[in-house]
Length: 193
Image (tube, one colour):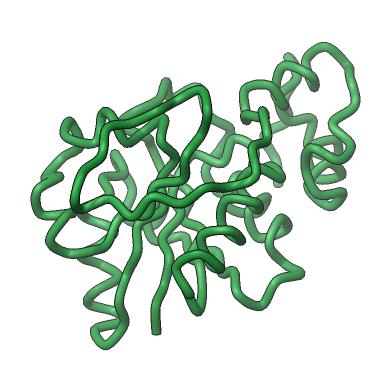
C-alpha cells in the first residue's frame, strides 16, 4: 500500500487539513492517509491543548472517510515528536508499505533544519503541497502538488473561538461540538475529558 503521513499539532484540526489529505491522496495515488498528532511539536510553540483531546478531535474530523486513519503513536511515545522517529515506527509496523510524508510549502523551505532530514529523504517520498503565500525552491526529492487554496489556519480558528465568533464550516460539526463541550481555546478551558 501507498500511505501518506500527515503530522502536525492539529490544534485544532480544520477543513484545510482535510483538503490537503484528500488532494495528496488523489495526486499521489495513495491508498490511505495517516493523521498523526504530535505530542510536543519541535517546530511550534507548545501552547497546545492536551494531546489526547487533539487526538480525539482528529478522530472526529476524519470519522466519515475510510481512507483516513488517526494514529496516536507520537502521543504514546511522549516527549518531542520528531518525524524521523515516527517514520521508523511506521516502517517497523508496516514493513511492506511505501510511505509519503505530506507537508505544506510553508514547511518545505525549512526542511533541511529537521532532525535527520537526510534520513527522512531516504526513507520516504515527500509530497509538498504548494501554497501561494509560501513558494519554495525546487528539490529533486520533493513531489510538488497543487491543492485548492484555503486561507485557513488553526491559529485563526483559535482566535475566532476566543473572540466568540462562529467556526461553522471551518471545522467539522462534530469537532465544533467537542470544542464547545470542553471549553477548548477559551480562557476557561476545561481539563476533563
